[in-house]
Image (cartoon, rainbow, N blue to C red):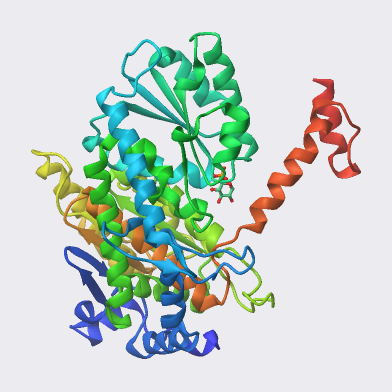
Amino acid sequence: MDFNALKPQATLTELFDADPQRFSRFSARLDDILFDYSRTTLTDDTRAALLAHLEAQDFGSKREAMFAGAKINTTEDRRVLHTALRMPEGSTLIADGEDIAAEILSSRAACYAFAEAVRSGAYANGAGEPFTDVVNIGIGGSDLGPLLVAEALKLHMTGPRLHFVSNVDGAALTDVFNTCDPTRTLFIIASKSFSTIETMETAKVALARLKGIVADASVHFAALTSKPEAASAQFGIPAERCFGFGDYVGGRYSVWSPIGLPLMIGLGSDVFGDFLAGGHEADSHFREAPLAENIPVLMALVGVWHRNVCDYASRCVVPYDQRLALLPQFLQQLDMESNGKRVTVEGAPVAHATSPVVWGSAGTNAQHAYFQMLHQSNDVQPVEFMVAAENHSEGLDGLQNILLANCLAQAQAFARGRSTDEAKALMIADGMDEATADALAPHRTFPGNRPSTLTLYRKLTPRTLGRLIAMAENRAFTEGVFWGINSFDQWGVELGKVLATAMLPHVTGEADAPDPMMAGALAHLRAL
Ligand SMILES: O=P(O)(O)OC[C@H]1O[C@H](O)[C@H](O)[C@@H](O)[C@@H]1O
């Protein structure tokens, strides 16, 4: 596709001045969720051109192939069926004779049963006491999704306290042993591959420490993995506490699977069920809504517009919702690991940019950190605003209105900017003399025409969180189809995993430096 032929011809203010209906023609809804992309420079023609390109990639059949369980992850010869994990009871899905729905629903039932047993104390420690704390040991997709949901739905937590240990430096594990009663703590080893060195080694340390404290440490362990036999062999965890899932669930898409067990324990199966139902609802929208009203598809078109036509290297995600503060990190893995690729599904070079850098943090805090750069540097980064109409808690309407006002004012300011003349006139109206106003005006000028999108929802409920995360997943899929890449492998990460293991003997001094490139740093390390 010739992206250069699509370059925007009008600014955001010109587009709004020319079309009073712009908001309604450049926004879409799913019940209470609004996706407003009117403050991007997309026009009818350019949106139609991008949609036509997407359809020319056979988008509709590729989307259905994913939902039906075709092996669309060709480099790993795998199905991509995280969407099936949020199917309601009574659903059917058979792929190549394999009853996927039965497998998923029975694994979900086993997780729910264990979660409820931990919550009620029916599954207890060796002394028959209920567990007070649950520690998830996992990294990447075996950490970010559950951690995000645990933070987002903190007010819905009714079970034991949840803790997340991911980094191999042991900091979080030390905190767990310092703050929890280990005799009342359940450790969950979460690793799809059951071979990630950070998770395996951290879990071994936890097991060794616990062995010095309780008579039967294995009671304190459960495993979430697609390699349950490895969990039993390496940690002695009995089969009934190894919760498996198929290799058709990618790590970064796995929060809906047994990887969500800590959430099921903390939230209870009903609340977790609402989260799944929200995800399923978003899937139905993705499969059924016309493309021009389909929120994940429109999000993807905006993504492509900004990355490939406007050449913006990043997108900044700013939820004005403290409980979504970890969403940018979650999306970083989801988008950059899925779509940070340079060859097509067929292995040919991709001729254009793919995933932008995804970054951001919660607003309004973000305003007081890096919005200066977003408003006035020469590099334009589109911003994705998110905000709820209602606060999570009662009695905070006043605060919520301030939050909303900030969010909307920022979106408006990025789009409109402030001209040098306007800046000067404001200063003179404030009593400043002309010469000083002249000198300061360039510094107080905002170029404007900086695009943003706005996702507005009623309240961050479990169902809404499920809808928002599933929409983000479906957006990543759609962008991948647009770019012609495989969004479901991650060979770039695999390289790092292998090389770190190879580097270990050089760090411990068992082997000499592997090459001159690392010799200096290793020599310095050995001398310390
Ligand atoms: O769940 P695990 O097999 O331990 O993998 C944990 C993580 O490892 C790597 O970083 C992969 O790129 C991620 O996609 C994965 O989520």
